Image (cartoon, rainbow over all chains, first blue to last red; front, side, top):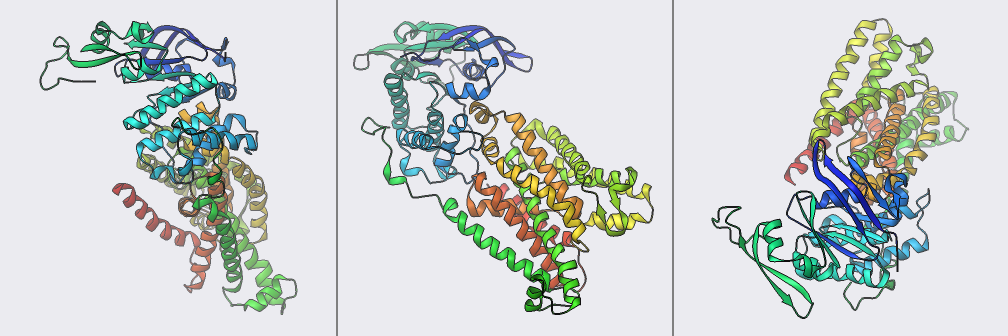
Length: 275
Length: 355
């Protein structure tokens, strides 16, 4: 299974004059799951947004299947690459199915008429995210977790082979977190979906990703399999957290247990655990 | 999405359409009926009431008297039709700009667009070529719509630019819009004073906004624009739906968000200009119409846009009929819509704050 691959050369990205990412190159192999981890403000979202052409890099290029992404029409990109940005807002009165329908936009003709295949993709996306029963409810009446699943369903309906997810599990309870991650994992195994997701939970990252990219101050400081990346030293240097790493025999992945914040970084007044 | 769920289509959800969609057909039919009744009523009342039977006979080309024919066909029918189309255009313009800016308060009057239309039109009448305005019958040339649209789009773009520092604050956009609108209204008054000829009085009548004395020549200015712009606006529903989701999502789905917004905005400003050039500055239809439409048919703009068109037509017709049926003087329609709008706007503001 090989779909298009995504790569970036010497990316420099920022907002106004402030550079968030200095000089970053990477290649995402097709049909892999990559997790981007790092503290708040390290540039995870900025990287995903730049990879998905939502942010124009100040220097460097993003390549989609070897072609500079700026040379492709935004619609052509949308057929290959989907991104779920963080915290999108929902228009009033729109129903779940209507929102998920929007995911078909890059595939429909100029008259926006949905074909049978479009409807099949929409129905499938709803089923995959457990939303079939919610299809005709209005999105603004749903809980935060349900809304997040609606957005994921919209991204799935896009039928792109590369999917970028910016903290897809935020606002979700632990069951729905697992469901999203298992879904992503399954789509990767069964359909060769390429996934890049920003995650806060290191244990999720090591459990569900083939590859972990740890970022700090806009640069990749560690890159590899969970076993190789998740270490006490990494947690200390990247997050400033004292942690214990144990091995989970069942999942076969390392688990980190944060113990406390390093004294050197912050005074330890009433702050013992900061995940 | 648990391991047990299948990839197959779920057959149980097929025919349970959402409330807004199920209501859509009913809303359109009920709205059209109401509109026909309002037009009939509008034709019947005025200086010298005409019975429904006589009005219908006149409309069918067999008037009971020559006077009936004159009143119904030459005076009241064009007035009613101008009201229907101008109201529809204004509400459609409001629905488009609300979607494009993701702001429920972004109607042409509250974003400076209407004031921009009026200002540039008045300037064109005062200093432009003479063919642009026929002073005898309050009639602007069809091409003045382009001038008005330019003024409206310019003022609207300025307001959006000024308000763009804090996106997502709906009241800021409106505040900016109202301030720019006031400045433009002052500038308009200034132009009227400088120009200060016998035409001043008539121009200020146009400015107030009314359906009084709108006859076939006015209709002939309005309908070609509506015939072009309404289908264009309705075809923009797909774009408008994407823009409603925010720029990030719209771009990630493959839309050119900037161009789409600019396009919808220009269509909205031109619709506003088309209506205002004919009926003068009639306000608030663009705010109230889309809100009623959303309430009835949900949030999908493929339904909201046609429903807004209808809601605006009904609102302006009802305001016109109301102004004539319940007052003895010829109250300008704009006054009635302003009254309606002020109340409605207050309700919206209170609800927004309590959210």
